[in-house]
Length: 342
Image 1 (cartoon, rainbow, N blue to C red):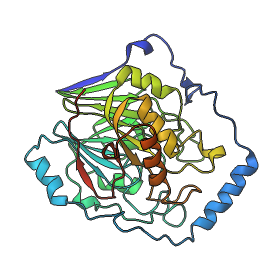
Image 2 (tube, rainbow, N blue to C red):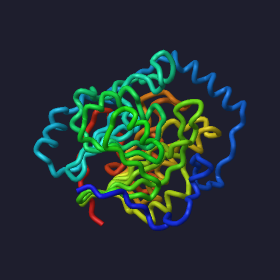
Image 3 (cartoon, helix red, strand yellow):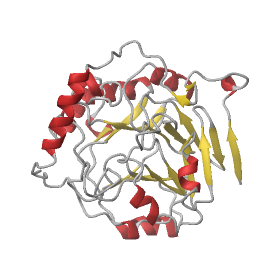
Image 4 (cartoon, rainbow, N blue to C red):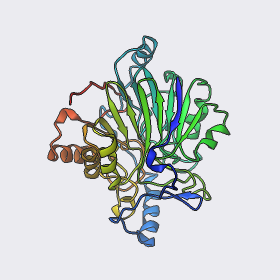
């Protein structure tokens, strides 16, 4: 039985800091400074040149997913928790017998049009028509490489799916005919039998048109099941908020954390973690496993496209993570989330 989203006690009776004059804002982070205007201009010019680059895809970066296994686990209500990466921040998470799709971006362009804007240089690993039935569609924010309108249009036929979004993003789905939509503020909880979904803070921003900057919220999410606790950071920069998340909701068994789209740091530090900061988030939330995401899919920033995994693995090893607890997945790959002790 579905229970209504529950507001964390410390928000009752007061207006949270991140609500500000009809828009949302990040929690305080004194390590951040405002980038120079000329840095933005030169960055935009470089991004325009990147649109013509030829990308050499490493062998094994994209694999054919086992579509039959995805549907079989669902049909037979497999008790295994599993994770399948479809590129960028898009995962199929099977937990407590429910299938969750995060930040769906499965079409060609991360933009409102196919004429311009960043284009995927690899496939999504699975066609939209081959997706299993989705129980929960979970959105971290409204940027085009996380909320893809062409993917959303294809998901409208899934009438039993519940859409879970941060505040003020629900109207996007209501306008497109989705009936089961739940909006969540930071620290809100949503319960279904043995599964609890919690919306948590992240450090990012929202914008989909020239007129709606920060009018909808952004969030990370925790998925607490009987066997595993999974933390999905969405897009985020590093900040002290993750220590608070670790204290209140940790430890986690698996953390899905962004390791790409981090250069130039002057611009990206406030919005995206680099590989070393991604590992620090894992430490802050006391995660046993780290899973790298938000890389190797679409060119958004300056760093070499296939640099993030090496830096991520090196940083994780330096911080004491064993190799089998730091995952770099292929697009289309599925892995079992084995329950961990302690």
